[in-house]
Image (cartoon, rainbow, N blue to C red; front, side, top):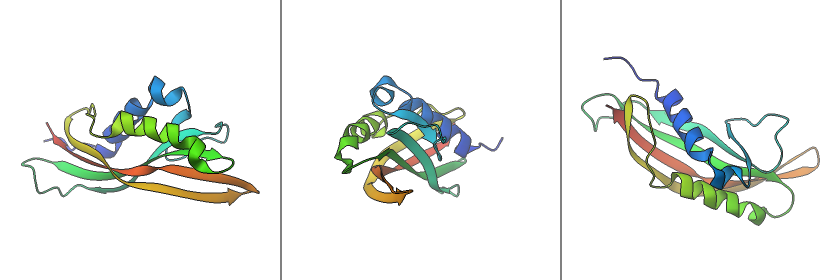
Length: 138
């Protein structure tokens, strides 16, 4: 059995789900982990937070992963970015990921996130959620 690089196939699948008109019409990106310095606000961003490869629920190799998927933008109160968050939910929550060499069993938003940070006098808002993914090899 060939080991599956779940991090790569999950990153590719999430990018594919977010790189659709419903998201990209209202946000730059999507960006994996870090947006480039040239990114225009607001943008969609995703990053792996944790992954467990010791998935005992399946006969073969499997994993459980937790991804942070969010809208990032500068400016005032973050409610202007809710449309991006809603588009992300539509693209990911309870949808099917197309995984090369693996089967997506589950992707679901687990919790919401909202926080801000100030960089160089500019307020940046992060609005989105944590998504749990369960998959196994095919």
